Length: 357
Image 1 (cartoon, helix red, strand yellow):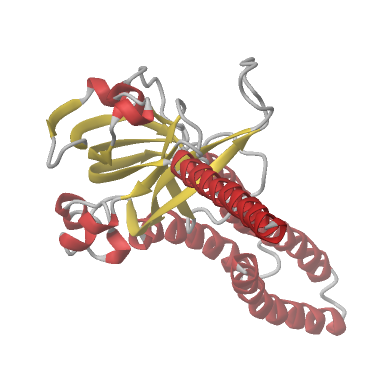
Image 2 (cartoon, rainbow, N blue to C red):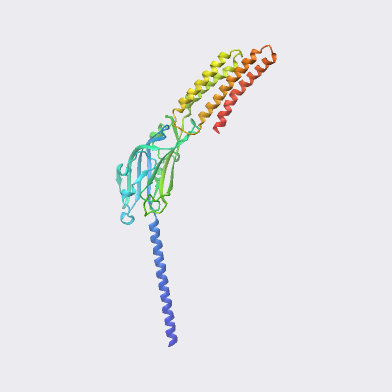
């Protein structure tokens, strides 16, 4: 009898521990599931369709006109996010953009399914960009339109590209977001769009912006539309290369003058020097104030060097000509002129190639 009671007690304890274990596992699973649902951010799909984009290189800005759209699923009773809060997306590099810009620009809204939103609108405005003129006038630039939601961090909301739309529209992968209007006149302006890109990222702010409810650092999702441009070569050949070549050609004529024509040589070199200085000032007037030497400046510097050398050689050859009774001086003048005729274009062409590397 006692043995039966002992077995019954052991069985009851085993069942009790089993029940506690099963309850603990179930509770843990529910907590993990709830945490996973809680940590899953809302996905905001975005796309743009560029109608026009025009850079202002001197102001380091560009003007863009485009249609935009957002697609997202949201049950505000569960997420606590309203449509208005979700649309509090900012143009990070926009100039003079008003608050709630997207809400104010809505031109169409529909709901393809319950708690699913499709919202579209139109924006035109100016944006900052940071041009790099080191290779001007053969430089390449990147103009970005950057979106960020400042209301929710990346744990709550992420912005992604609506790549499915671009695929359905059969857009060229190298020219996503561009309208046919832009592509049609792509080679008729002073610049040429050679590709576009879309990138998704997050930016870490090392500040709580004075909000004690936030952690010291916060991360926000970003979506960046990039347009890459370079300059059309033909206009700059006529605008830059040909005038500079004419200036240097005038200097090169010095090496074909008789040594005693010092007045003509001086006139050619001085005129060429003044023309080159004025030409450089005119070209730099099209650019903003920059703190580094650009490609075109280097070409002007080598031109100044060649002009200065030509002036110095003219004086030296003139002095040698004054000692014309010495046959050795005539031979020396002839060799100097021959070497100058060879090295003058050689130095300039080498500099053009070297500075381009």
